[in-house]
Length: 401
Ligand code: ADP
Ligand code: MG
Image (cartoon, rainbow, N blue to C red; front, side, top):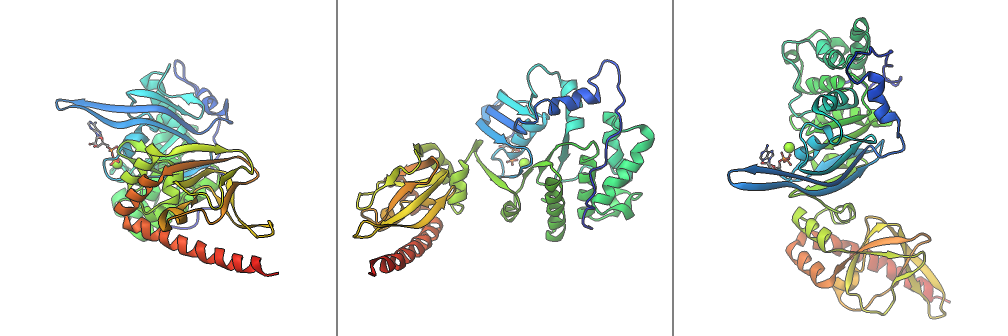
């Protein structure tokens, strides 16, 4: 795939208005009316399937906010509810309870199925694992199809716009080929061009690289990064943990519930069920600016993860002079040295110049999970070593006259 050209997205022409349907401009207004709203807001989202065996809870009360311009990956074990969650954003499926607001619009209340489908066609680009291109249509025709459905662009203009999109994904030489005659990576690129047919602000992708080799995967992620630079919001479910480093935010779902992002960020080696356990038992505490969270020589009975704000780790000289030996930010933790090595706090920890939100996990819970997760205990052990060394160096320096 070539690098996408750096010009603007193909511009839309004046939409054709049809009687009795939401017009293009009306559908767009749904987004434009509240551009200050988040791109996606989910509140108390529940999805339950009923069958002869009884009720099966797939989503158990999900709250999630995604801002405009974010590139979000969603990870979780097979069957954890990733696709179901995405289908709630696209309106392909409907929730049992709760609210989903996309681009400022509640997509499940006061809107009927055909309005939702029309809204989806104009505002969402959807990419699937198995591309789902129509086999008997050329790549160009596949990209034009959503324009036909959504009445997007004048009829005669559509081939030109479809060609621009195929160029952007590096497929200008293959426009008249049938999908089967190009590689799987190229098929997925064509599917992305098709998803962009109506210039949607939001792209939703369910394991888009699940069927691709590593080179094609890289090309697709490059393309997504370019789209995010151009202002698109992308939500991507992926099985591949290595891809999460390419997105701006990762959401972990475990058994239909979202993991607190500070926990998954600070303890990435932890099993998802342990992350979920910490999410449920952690106590959220708020500290005012410069407030003391841990004081030196006091016993420590919690493990702390920073959720918002920054803290200073402070050493005090005999003379009373203080040294900030490190500053920790959201997704980092403290208190582990005392819990793992035993004893009292060896430094003070204070909120920075803004208020701080921390998650506090009780000693016994922390130690139990560390015992069950040697990989995490080892990773934390390394951080402990590093912190102890830098503390010693600082202490040596501070006792000099
Ligand atoms: P993931 O994408 O994370 O692998 P899914 O969201 O597809 O998981 O599915 C989550 C769970 O919901 C699975 O256990 C699946 O079997 C169940 N499920 C999904 N769709 C249906 C359905 N239509 N009827 C009953 N159960 C379903
Ligand atoms: Mg899935």
